[in-house]
Structures are given as structure tokens and as C-alpha cells.
Amino acid sequence: MKLATWNVNSLTVRLPQVLAWLAAHNPDALCLQETKLIDEKFPLAEIASIGYRAQFFGQKTYNGVALLTREAASDVVKNIPGFDDASARVITGTVSGVRVIGAYMPNGEAPESEKFSYKMRWLDALHDWLKLECADHPKLALLGDFNIAPEDRDVYDPVALAGQIHCTDRERAQFARLLSLGLHDGFRLFEQPPKSWSWWDYRNLAFRKNQGLRIDHILVSGALRSSVASCTIDKLTRKNERPSDHAPVWLELDPQALSPSS
DNA sequence: ATGTCACCTGGTAGGTGA
Image (spheres, rainbow, N blue to C red):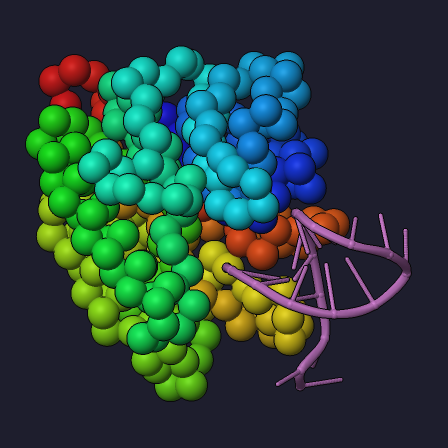
């Protein structure tokens, strides 16, 4: 079973790339962030034409998430229950027995800004809800654009960016608190190349200079951990024409993860 | 090099968010 996440920065612009990526990688689930589409404009027919179903939840201009799956997703939830949010940021569904939560976490703009305060409140709410979801669904994966670089090794220049957005102690503490629910960073279950990033700023020739951050993550519950066979950042998509500023991340689970006893 | 991209409104440019 393959689970994937990709911040596409406009599904309208990136649809051809998303269709090509699905055809090439054939994931069981792909979580999209920043679709930037109201639901009436979601390209359902194009996605269906290559054999995928879609759950989606969007708004004009900003945010917007989708859960693309080969098999139907069940028990779909939009956003964080009990947390009043003007932004479309989370879509959740059960896919082949795995609870799949796709999230576009707030950017936060700058430490001590109003948007940073919202990011902290949002992460508090996510944590509290996830605690319940983890109890209800032992086999759970949280995928998406976290907008948090968990450690210095996830940052191209940890000295220059110390204390800056994505790298603050408060954001990293929130990431650690998600792990404390019994979740594991799928990427770090394996030895990985140094300087592995999932996002490069469009500005400053950042991709060419490999100046990026690892802010897109796949966390898996304890019940899935031993079944994770690999976790990969697909940096090649950043070399596409009109690339997203984020690369897809995907994780492979052994088939045993799907058996009821695991 | 503060060297981009995508969205909106309201136009053929400027503002916003990332």
C-alpha cells in the first residue's frame, strides 16, 4: 500500500502533473494541499478518468485539500471537529482499513504574528482531536504540509534560520507533541541522504542551490510502523515545467499492514 | 540580488499570501 502527500500550489495549474504522477506511482491514497479551488470547480471527471476517486474540500484562492484514492474512502471528515476554522485544511477518510488524515497546516507567517498565534491554536486543536482518532483507529497516518521543519537537519541553513518561521522552538514542540501520541516520522525510519528537503522557495534560485526545508511529512501510528517499507521525497517533480514549490512525499506499507490482525 | 508563483480585483497593473 502506498500513501502520498503533495502540496500542489493550485490544482488548476498542476492537474496535468498530478494525473501523470498518479499514473506513474499508482498510490492507494494521495493527499493534496493548496488546491485553491471551490468544490464546484474541482476536476473530478479528469481524476475519475484515470481510475481515482476524490474527496475534497476547498475554498476560493487559498488552502483547499483533497484525498484521492483508488478504493472508496469511508467515514470522511472535513477539518478538525470542534475547531471553528475559516480555512479548508484537513480531509480525513478510511482507506483499506487505514485512517488517512491529509492536512495543510497553517504557515504562521512570522513568530509572534497573529497568524503564528493561529498556527499554535490550530496545532493544539489538531493534537487534541488526533488523540481521539488514534484511539479509534490504531492504523493511522497523518500526511501533509506541516509547515514545520522538525530538526536542524531538516533546514538548509539552521544557523541563519534559527528562530525563524518553520524552525521555532514552539513549532518544533508542537511537532514533538504529535509524535508523543505514538506517531512516527516515516522519513526518519530509514537512513536518508543528507540535505533532503521537500520544499524550495521559488525565489533566490533556491532549488538550483538546493536551499530547502523538509516540511512535508508522513507520520504513522505504532501499529503501522513495522510495516513501513520505505519513505521517499520525489524531488524529480521539482524539475517539471511549472513545478510546485513542494515535492511529493510517499510511503510504502507492506501488505501485512492491511491484514485485520496487524 | 528582495533572482518567484498564483491568486484576486479589476483590468492590461497592483496587492496578498506563501
